[in-house]
Length: 534
Length: 98
Image (cartoon, rainbow over all chains, first blue to last red):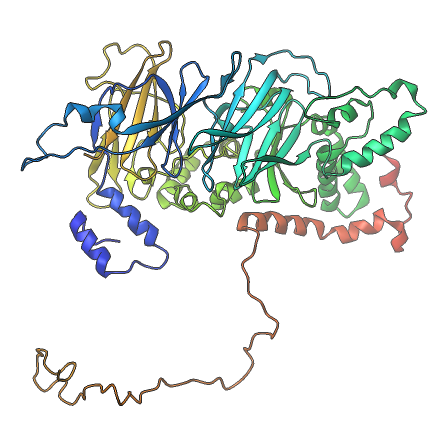
């Protein structure tokens, strides 16, 4: 888009030429080709916290204390020293500048977890419009918890899970939501999805999707709970009916008194009724209708139903909700699967299903198996719509195979190499529903600007195996030159090559600033490097 | 002040010699040509409102597919609801097997 690679020439060009329609942001991002974090401060002495991420507007750096009980928030700043000499570039940075504190000022330290609770350091969601942050603390997991009160057998239980809503500006805790004897998948925010101001929390243990709203005042308001009930007044209706039914049947007359948060949901699930209610009923009737509508001939229809529905009936009934995401304010994408796959980390061998559910009409719109080619094609073409919410502008520019030709080429390459298409489709669809806010909006990960090794570093914030070689970022356009390198770990490389090391990278979304943290798996000591544009 | 373009260097000195300077007291009589349609076939309906579709394209695909699948339901629903005057009796082989 610019005719020259020189930054001054580009600035002049920006003054006189308007960009092509709808490409003004792309043109602005091209300046990141010139301003790169090429200088590295190795092994910076910094407080021993685990740094989580920069917020997506670049205002805060979130970190947790080593004992996982405190939250420390920093404000990213920049170096502020000046050099009075003529030829400043050759001078080394003053010692004062090489400290962690010259890049980050601590704003506050808040204790979130009490004695036996721990902050889940993989969990953090940010509501940019109000600068609210959502954190989670939990007590220890209890495996082999008994399946009482409507809980699913096989899912562990956590005595207390608390979600804290904080105003990041000053660290004030605005609201909390507590779940008792429940299980929510907190790792990498998998069990929670934030869409604008709507929050979906999946209670794996009780199979309920809690929909909450984060109000501007900072309150977490319950909107609905989807599971055994679909509409808000289902519970009331079934309650009044159940009470009428309970009178002649003395064995079911006693309702256990329930003080806990999840309300009468579990009471009614306790009742030994053979009716499947709520979302399970919607799902099964949709599958039935779909198969019914395929055939018009009655005998063939019955055969089809027997083969596709009744033969697998128990399997369908036993499906549990694994994960949920919003597709828009009314529609959810729900992943169903077996009990074993919901808890274990490696669920590739289990069969899984996807359903699109409309919360307002309580209808299931679509149902796919995880090997569905149709769903894969939609994912390939419209991947952005799985994680874009209309209000955040930067989300539109995160590279994906739907909006970037280089990413699409990479995908097609993997597709052509895959021997079995159904395995490939399953592997691709395994990322659905997407994890909320897991991609960094930094322009250095823009595939149309830079080329880099996706196995060593990428926009997704996951730990990666660390190598001693620096990670290269090469220009996508002419002259395809190496622009900068990110090297985690100490400058001279590590002395022992045998211990496995993992690295994580935190890129500031706007400034040419990045932190790389290299850790060995056993010792907690980590090496923190700061990469910035000098 | 001279004419707007008269004093500027030009390749041929006779260029722009016929251009008269624009006089603020006498505004230019140039009005752009107005084009009128000769027929009314392409007029939009009077109550037409153009707005953005609220559902994004992904959801539109899901809903469209759902509608396509539900369309043969019209043939099927005749069997399910006898009060619509269907020709086949309710007690057919398909229902007896449940």
